[in-house]
Image (tube, rainbow, N blue to C red):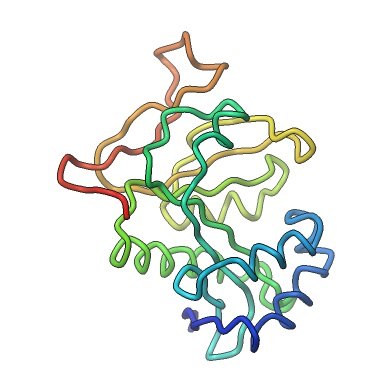
Length: 192
Protein backbone atom coordinates (compact mmCIF):
# COMPACT_ATOMS: atom_id res chain seq x y z
CA UNK A 1 0.00 0.00 0.00
CA UNK A 2 1.34 3.42 -0.99
CA UNK A 3 1.18 6.27 1.51
CA UNK A 4 2.99 9.49 2.39
CA UNK A 5 5.31 9.84 5.37
CA UNK A 6 6.36 13.11 7.03
CA UNK A 7 9.86 14.34 6.24
CA UNK A 8 12.44 15.28 8.85
CA UNK A 9 15.34 16.95 7.05
CA UNK A 10 18.07 15.66 9.34
CA UNK A 11 16.76 12.10 9.34
CA UNK A 12 15.82 11.77 5.67
CA UNK A 13 18.46 13.93 3.95
CA UNK A 14 20.96 11.05 3.44
CA UNK A 15 18.30 8.84 1.83
CA UNK A 16 17.09 11.62 -0.50
CA UNK A 17 20.71 12.50 -1.37
CA UNK A 18 21.36 8.86 -2.29
CA UNK A 19 18.28 8.73 -4.51
CA UNK A 20 19.16 12.03 -6.23
CA UNK A 21 22.57 10.59 -7.15
CA UNK A 22 21.06 7.48 -8.79
CA UNK A 23 21.06 7.49 -12.58
CA UNK A 24 17.31 6.94 -13.02
CA UNK A 25 16.63 10.04 -10.88
CA UNK A 26 19.51 12.32 -11.93
CA UNK A 27 18.63 11.74 -15.60
CA UNK A 28 15.50 13.85 -15.04
CA UNK A 29 16.37 15.90 -11.95
CA UNK A 30 19.88 16.88 -13.05
CA UNK A 31 22.62 17.92 -10.64
CA UNK A 32 21.94 16.20 -7.32
CA UNK A 33 23.32 19.17 -5.37
CA UNK A 34 20.51 21.36 -6.78
CA UNK A 35 17.86 18.81 -5.80
CA UNK A 36 19.39 18.46 -2.36
CA UNK A 37 19.42 22.26 -1.88
CA UNK A 38 15.70 22.25 -2.78
CA UNK A 39 15.13 19.49 -0.22
CA UNK A 40 17.01 21.51 2.43
CA UNK A 41 14.98 24.66 1.66
CA UNK A 42 11.55 22.98 1.65
CA UNK A 43 9.44 23.48 4.78
CA UNK A 44 8.51 20.17 6.41
CA UNK A 45 4.84 20.83 5.57
CA UNK A 46 5.63 21.05 1.84
CA UNK A 47 7.13 17.64 1.13
CA UNK A 48 6.76 13.98 1.97
CA UNK A 49 8.42 10.63 1.50
CA UNK A 50 6.54 8.16 -0.63
CA UNK A 51 6.33 4.81 1.12
CA UNK A 52 5.16 1.33 0.29
CA UNK A 53 4.12 -0.45 3.47
CA UNK A 54 6.09 2.08 5.57
CA UNK A 55 9.29 1.57 3.52
CA UNK A 56 10.39 4.83 1.81
CA UNK A 57 10.62 4.49 -1.96
CA UNK A 58 10.45 8.08 -3.23
CA UNK A 59 9.95 11.75 -2.62
CA UNK A 60 7.40 14.46 -3.47
CA UNK A 61 7.59 18.22 -2.81
CA UNK A 62 5.56 21.31 -3.63
CA UNK A 63 6.16 25.04 -3.65
CA UNK A 64 4.50 28.20 -4.85
CA UNK A 65 5.27 28.90 -8.50
CA UNK A 66 7.33 31.89 -9.54
CA UNK A 67 5.25 33.51 -12.28
CA UNK A 68 8.28 35.41 -13.63
CA UNK A 69 10.23 32.15 -14.04
CA UNK A 70 7.29 30.61 -15.89
CA UNK A 71 6.93 33.66 -18.14
CA UNK A 72 10.64 33.40 -19.00
CA UNK A 73 9.94 30.05 -20.71
CA UNK A 74 6.76 31.32 -22.36
CA UNK A 75 4.18 30.07 -19.85
CA UNK A 76 1.64 32.74 -19.01
CA UNK A 77 -1.88 32.71 -17.60
CA UNK A 78 -1.07 30.55 -14.59
CA UNK A 79 -3.06 31.74 -11.57
CA UNK A 80 -1.17 33.43 -8.77
CA UNK A 81 -0.84 31.15 -5.74
CA UNK A 82 -0.52 28.03 -7.89
CA UNK A 83 1.89 25.33 -6.79
CA UNK A 84 4.58 23.39 -8.61
CA UNK A 85 4.94 19.75 -7.57
CA UNK A 86 8.04 17.59 -8.10
CA UNK A 87 8.21 13.83 -7.63
CA UNK A 88 10.57 10.92 -8.10
CA UNK A 89 10.67 7.25 -7.24
CA UNK A 90 14.11 6.60 -5.79
CA UNK A 91 13.97 2.88 -5.06
CA UNK A 92 14.77 1.08 -8.34
CA UNK A 93 12.71 -1.94 -7.21
CA UNK A 94 9.60 0.28 -7.07
CA UNK A 95 9.87 1.54 -10.65
CA UNK A 96 7.19 0.62 -13.14
CA UNK A 97 4.62 -0.67 -10.66
CA UNK A 98 2.46 2.44 -10.28
CA UNK A 99 3.55 4.08 -7.01
CA UNK A 100 4.12 7.47 -8.69
CA UNK A 101 0.53 8.02 -9.78
CA UNK A 102 -0.84 6.80 -6.44
CA UNK A 103 1.58 9.05 -4.53
CA UNK A 104 0.61 12.02 -6.69
CA UNK A 105 -3.08 11.42 -6.00
CA UNK A 106 -2.35 11.32 -2.26
CA UNK A 107 -0.22 14.48 -2.47
CA UNK A 108 -2.92 16.29 -4.49
CA UNK A 109 -5.52 15.38 -1.86
CA UNK A 110 -3.25 16.59 0.93
CA UNK A 111 -2.38 19.88 -0.76
CA UNK A 112 -5.89 20.72 -1.96
CA UNK A 113 -7.32 19.97 1.50
CA UNK A 114 -4.67 21.89 3.47
CA UNK A 115 -3.56 24.75 1.22
CA UNK A 116 -6.26 24.95 -1.47
CA UNK A 117 -4.16 26.43 -4.30
CA UNK A 118 -5.92 27.45 -7.51
CA UNK A 119 -3.76 24.99 -9.47
CA UNK A 120 -1.08 22.34 -9.01
CA UNK A 121 1.30 21.94 -11.94
CA UNK A 122 4.05 19.50 -12.81
CA UNK A 123 6.66 19.75 -15.55
CA UNK A 124 8.60 16.97 -17.19
CA UNK A 125 10.87 16.36 -20.12
CA UNK A 126 9.01 15.46 -23.30
CA UNK A 127 11.20 12.33 -23.30
CA UNK A 128 10.12 11.19 -19.81
CA UNK A 129 7.28 8.88 -20.85
CA UNK A 130 7.02 7.25 -17.39
CA UNK A 131 6.41 10.60 -15.68
CA UNK A 132 3.84 11.59 -18.29
CA UNK A 133 1.97 8.32 -17.74
CA UNK A 134 1.99 8.80 -13.95
CA UNK A 135 0.80 12.41 -14.26
CA UNK A 136 -2.06 11.41 -16.57
CA UNK A 137 -3.04 8.40 -14.45
CA UNK A 138 -3.27 10.68 -11.39
CA UNK A 139 -5.74 12.95 -13.18
CA UNK A 140 -3.45 15.64 -14.58
CA UNK A 141 -4.03 17.18 -17.98
CA UNK A 142 -1.24 17.99 -20.41
CA UNK A 143 -1.64 21.73 -20.83
CA UNK A 144 1.34 23.26 -22.64
CA UNK A 145 4.61 22.48 -24.36
CA UNK A 146 7.65 24.68 -23.73
CA UNK A 147 11.42 24.83 -24.18
CA UNK A 148 13.21 24.83 -20.83
CA UNK A 149 16.62 25.85 -22.20
CA UNK A 150 19.25 23.32 -21.12
CA UNK A 151 16.52 20.84 -20.07
CA UNK A 152 15.07 20.91 -23.59
CA UNK A 153 11.54 20.20 -24.67
CA UNK A 154 9.11 19.88 -21.74
CA UNK A 155 5.42 19.34 -21.04
CA UNK A 156 3.41 21.19 -18.42
CA UNK A 157 0.71 19.17 -16.68
CA UNK A 158 -1.95 20.57 -14.35
CA UNK A 159 -4.42 19.26 -11.83
CA UNK A 160 -7.51 21.16 -10.80
CA UNK A 161 -11.13 20.25 -10.72
CA UNK A 162 -12.99 23.50 -11.19
CA UNK A 163 -13.21 25.81 -14.25
CA UNK A 164 -10.78 25.62 -17.22
CA UNK A 165 -8.78 28.61 -18.34
CA UNK A 166 -6.41 28.86 -21.32
CA UNK A 167 -2.65 28.97 -20.81
CA UNK A 168 -0.96 31.28 -23.26
CA UNK A 169 2.31 30.25 -24.86
CA UNK A 170 3.98 31.86 -27.88
CA UNK A 171 2.92 28.89 -30.02
CA UNK A 172 -0.79 29.17 -29.21
CA UNK A 173 -1.23 32.90 -28.65
CA UNK A 174 -2.97 33.33 -32.00
CA UNK A 175 -4.73 29.96 -32.28
CA UNK A 176 -7.98 29.87 -30.33
CA UNK A 177 -8.71 26.33 -31.56
CA UNK A 178 -5.88 24.78 -29.54
CA UNK A 179 -6.70 23.16 -26.24
CA UNK A 180 -3.85 23.68 -23.76
CA UNK A 181 -5.89 24.07 -20.57
CA UNK A 182 -5.01 25.02 -17.09
CA UNK A 183 -7.71 25.49 -14.53
CA UNK A 184 -8.87 28.64 -12.86
CA UNK A 185 -10.17 28.65 -9.30
CA UNK A 186 -13.84 29.25 -8.70
CA UNK A 187 -14.64 32.76 -7.46
CA UNK A 188 -14.73 31.61 -3.84
CA UNK A 189 -11.34 29.83 -3.95
CA UNK A 190 -8.04 31.49 -3.21
CA UNK A 191 -4.38 30.61 -2.86
CA UNK A 192 -2.54 30.57 0.48
